Amino acid sequence: MQIVIIGSGNVAYHLAKAFVMNNIPLVQIFGRNEKELSKISEELKIPFSTEKLQAADLYIICVSDNSVENVSKLILAKDSLVAHTSGSLPKEILAGDYRKASFYPLQTFSKSKSLDYSKIPFFVETENKEDQQILFNLASKISENVMESTHEKRKYIHLTAVFACNFVNHLFARAKEISDAQEIPFDYFLPLIDETVQKIHEIDPKSAQTGPAVRNDKRILELHEQLLKDESLEIYKTMNHSIQKMYEL
Image (cartoon, rainbow, N blue to C red; front, side, top):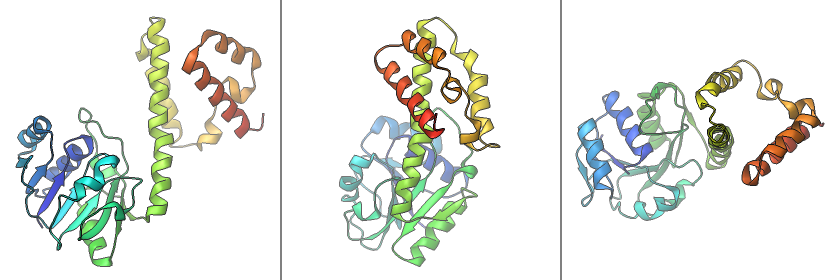
């Protein structure tokens, strides 16, 4: 099978790397950022182009959600299978006259961070069983966890991921702002962060909750509010309100 990856960002890089590591040949990585494509091409030994899209059996679009539709119009081959990697978009967003699919890897990707691709869940949606089998076979060469998912279900998978990953990481960033302002090394908090994440492998998150909000410790909550301002204060109040509402405090 001739496969082309379109994109030069984090998802494109890691998906290309996962393919190469599992001996899945790529005929091209295509995009508009020549500098990033060149880096990927040099590391993974994949031909790249910013001008001419190679003919292929399968195109995997790894670009921002805002760009998926426009990028999909570049693919003119009617006999090809085209999949995007968005967690939220329907496969129908793909604008060409070809077979449409989604190929969603549930993970946070940064080029500087290595990943165990075998642990990443992949969610596949296609127009027919034949294409589903193609993408299942492909994903199964990379991951131990491949599932079918409708667009409706995938929307909620992505929403859950935003809460579990993006929001949590933003709280890490806000926490580091506080520690940096007080010249407290953020490294001190890494064992706490590691334990918090590890704990929910064994305990339901609701049962694992600790802290002044779940204890309804009003004195500490008021003290903390006095130490904060602006966005961090609003986040603190909102999070504590959510915790107390969950536990009916």
